[in-house]
Structure formats: structure tokens, C-alpha cells
Image (cartoon, rainbow, N blue to C red; front, top):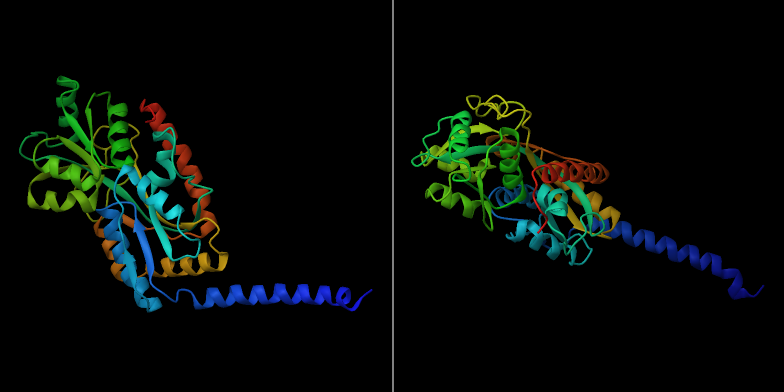
Length: 324
């Protein structure tokens, strides 16, 4: 055995040890420059991301740039983040649109919701709010709106700018046996503008988008989408209580990094997001917008999103929505 051959195992061990120490040092020093967080849209995803970013920024003493990329049901944001360097400095705040529903709503996506991302943590789970134009729509309850829709099939319209509001309305149609005309928008805030303006009749969308207009009197809230009433708005019935059998629809936000992001970096990001979700300001904000914090491990988020994919596929198929 030559001198070089004898030393090879030690050299190899040393190289592996240095690599391990380097990875550990990287994770320990992470982040050492500004982070970018990309929410998949404006409205609730952006507002929630900004709330969390403030808390994480305080913890890491680094700037966080929030860059919402709205449009195409979150596809633009997801595709963008999937193609970024796998270093943990660019994070997607996706939803059940990007990581559960789009897979059944579109024939082909420019990203794979499992292979192109590493889950970081869940962010929030929330109810949707059913609301109508307070001036043009006389219905005071879901039952009255259902009766209007049955009287004139296909005349009344619903708007949506994401998969949750679309699926929520489609499920309402399916469970109540009515025919509403679908009007798509690039985002939920855009759809809300037309709801306030009386150009569409109903939306079932996130609280942060609709509630300010309910409070102003421009919109009338009819019901919430989950199985139980909300503590923050106990006067509003659930869709089931309002006469829509077996109705249950919620939405969620979650954080993701590009695939192959180092495990130690993902773990550090998970710790930051979980800690931020415990901060009183974040909890209060989510509660006031009809949501609750949804911290998870990376593995649990992966299991959850795969199960959600099956759930949303079932709803989309049952509603007869053809993939685009």
C-alpha cells in the first residue's frame, strides 16, 4: 500500500467532516442577508405575509422584502420561486390554489407542487365569507339568494380571483342545485371591486378582502364557509345552517422554499415561521380575518398538501370544472 493510498480514507473523512461543519456553519449564520418572501397574490396572502415578515425581521435583524406576484391563480408566483436558487433566501407563501387545487384545474403547470418545493411550515387556515352587493341584491340570507337563483337560472353571477372562491361557489351551486354564471378575475380584490360596483352578485372569498366593504355597508354578509360559526362574527350562520347541505370549505396558506434547499436552512426557516405565528399581533390579525395560525413541521405540511390535493380534486370533478 502506498503512502497516498493509506491516507485516502483519512482525507475522505476530513473532507466529509469539513463539508458537514460548513453546512452547519451556513445554517447557524443563516440568514446573513435580506430575505425575499413571495406571496401568491394580493389581499389576504400579501397582508398575512407582511404581518409575519415584520415579526421574523425583528428576530433575525435582517430586512425582508415582500414581493407579491398576483395572477394566474398563483401559478406565476409558484413558477418564479421554483426557479430561484435553493439557498433559502427566496420563499413562496402559497395556498391551496398553488399546492392542491391547480393540479386539477389546469392540464399543464410550469411547476410540480411536490418535486419543485420543500415545505417550510403551514401559515394559516381560514373560513371564507359569503357576501352580496347590498344595493342590487335584496337577499338577506343564503336561503333567499338560493331562491332568487332558482327563479332565474343562470342570471345571477359569482366572481372569483383564485381557486378557493371559485371552488366555494361551485360547491354552493352543487349542494343547493342552482345555476350561477362564473366571472373570472386576476385576483380576489379585483373581483371585489366589481361586487361593490354591482357588476357581479355574490362572492365567497377571504375575510380580509370582503369584510371592509361589509363594514362600510357596500356588501351584505350572508354566511361563513366552515362547519362552525366564528367567534369573531357569531351572528353569521354557517352555510350548512343557512340551508346548504354538507357544505364545508376552508382555505390555507403555507410557506415553501425551492427544491434542494439545505435541510438545516429549511429547519431554521421553520423555526422562524412557527415562532412568528405565536406572536400576539399575528394571532390577533388572523383571528380578526376569520383564520387561525397553522404552524407545522416540513414533513407534516407535505402530508397535509397531498391529502388536500385529493380533497380539491374531488370537489373540482364533482362540480364538473374542466381543466384549462
